[in-house]
Length: 386
Image 1 (cartoon, helix red, strand yellow):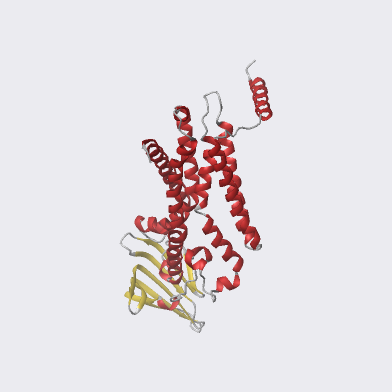
Image 2 (cartoon, one colour):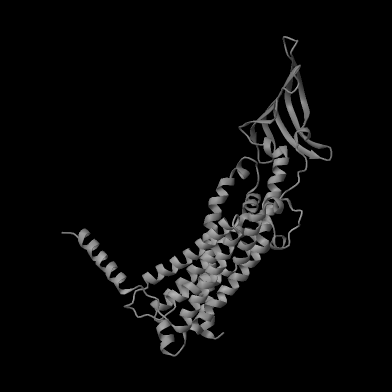
């Protein structure tokens, strides 16, 4: 790769990283805000919050990377055209194919990144998130430590906590136990803390009263205590078997599945569709670059507009991705539909390479340009000040 190729690679890859990080951060924030109660209600630190919500970042990168690459390639080509660099290179005898190889190098790097994320990192992040959610659902402690809420942890048992301090101390605890039909127990305590040891999980209460009211008795019996332990282990669901969904499987698990896999037996169609969606994912960055360069890579003078070419590139990429999405969705029930996405990618890449090799300038027909110009003129005249 010569100096011009390195310049194009550096510019394009730098723009790709900026767009990828920016879009991923924006979408991650919108997703993370839905789980903000993890930090506020359950008393987790900001590092735990970022760690848990950050597990979806690989999946976001998998979806955003091809789009970020398209934006980066379009930006670089538009910049080179505005600065007349493409025209100068063409006048110096450099063929479009030589220029295209630098963009192809970036596409190969992005395809390798997408392959790694699709095969391992995205399923790994979703698995870790599923493991954490399963642990939370099995742990009653995470359910009851929600200040300001009356939480029923089992039929007949209700708990309320007024405040949870930064050091983990609980303040203003109300516990009502009606599981015994012959007796109702109500516990009020000023302070408390959760203790988890080898014997189980306990809610240790301090400075409170226990009120027991037997059905046969008129008045309740009240006992004041300085320290009282309430066993929470009896409400825990215990360890639960984690069942990973199809999207949480590694690529090799989709390619060589266990014949006894319940998901494979119950949902063979979605299993197969997910496999083909993973296999074709690395091809989208390559096809996006080919389409973008086919529309925008040819040398143009400053009089030749690039707006319609940009629209054409975006439309071509959007159509290709729509075909892929449709093929995956309908391929879950009609297996032959899965072939459609491979045909679309092959036609897009083959047609784009032919255009690049021959140096063809893709432009809309003259009648369409004249119609757009006439429409623009009519609109400008209608809204022009009188």
